[in-house]
Length: 469
Image (cartoon, rainbow, N blue to C red; front, side, top):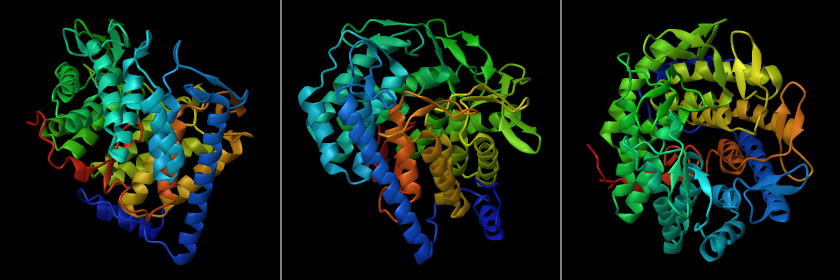
């Protein structure tokens, strides 16, 4: 990919939209450009179907595809059908109704969550609960909603702690929970899915449970209004006082903003409004002409680490969504430069030493998600071009004979025999949306996407009234 270059038109657009919060706009394209984008959208759609068929051939009924060995892997001792549930909303978006209906039938007829397995609360909330709710929002099958509610009820015992912050694990059959130490993302990323479930069922307990956990974290912020990284769910004490927006914290901030956008709950907006300025004040780090967000001590504000994760590339999207477009554009440029350095992104990277701390690339979507948001909000074609380049690199380094594989080391491009569920749910979806600018009713103007990119239409939640301040 070529280095990022701003056009004069792009700069004008950036200055215009950064003057305040603006409604997203659609990129205008010429006829030739539209044809080229349509061809790219068709290519992403074709590769999605090819990868889905590989999952069906080699991993049906299991959690994930191992694309190199052409086998499967399960997260736990028994499969929970995670890839198909996560993939459903993407299959629907791309018009694969027959494949989506097959997933729906399996969920209704064959899938039971009455399993003696301990599951990670955070991971199954965003993938299984979020995926089932997205499925119901599309098909309106009450049996799917029953499955979602059953699954959420099996999660709820984990929240029975002195703080209301859930334990790390819960047994789906017995309700026994364990793991008193969790990071902030695992502690308080539940308002969105549980709010949707409360809205669909009319039962406020789900949203109230998720919101209690969010309050518990925010109420333990430091005098600087910073939160830490890891917390004890029983005592409420901070186990790690590092403050950052990296993996382990990211979706806490993401759900403050997105839950407010969908539900219009002013309390969540107030928490976001308190949190954002101190993120900029204490975590933003200008280094070598680029904007990064590093790690600082929550009590002193002192910078303690320049180690970031590729998950942090979600933040330009959130900045753009909140109206801070100029800063979002600058941060996206930083992340694109890291991608260009390797041709993919390392999972962990030290921006001051210039060395990866963990060189794996797991087909992550965050940088493409932010490029998509910026393409819609600024109208600047450079962000569509950016996702074109990311897509080309994915095909070059990650495409296999049957699907796509993670990369063990971005320096050597050694393949890794794993295709995460979020490749279906997020990566392919955000690329397809970027290359399909004229699809009606599916973009960020109309929908709010979960952290796993499951879309929910704003119009369906205009009468949301559960526990709003």
